[in-house]
Image (cartoon, rainbow, N blue to C red; front, side, top):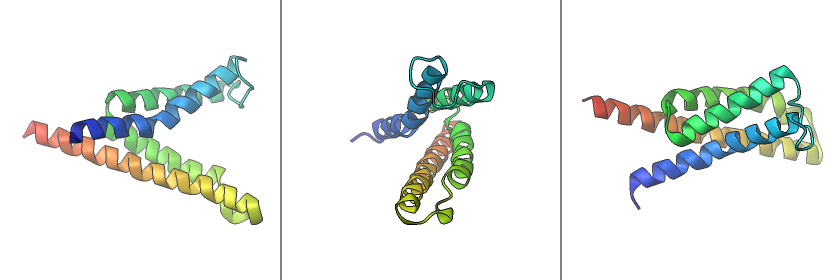
Length: 125
């Protein structure tokens, strides 16, 4: 398969979580879906940022920078929202699962950032 097609598909798949959750949170804030806590101004701003960043990555805009930014965001989210070490039993397993999904997505975002930065350097030379 063409490496360029794989790269575009990877961008779309990795960013889909940000686009999907951003839309869900904005629809929740608008009262279209069950409110997921985005009805506050900070929640709406966060959901808008998440949606915009996901769309930027999907469409190839500033992928290296935005992917790094989202990797940092997910690292903070992993430790703040999914502190598996504070739980026991099944609850610990659920939190660990979400934590590790964040870690996995961070890896994908770092790869996107590296690939995009490498392609940009090569096109300048």
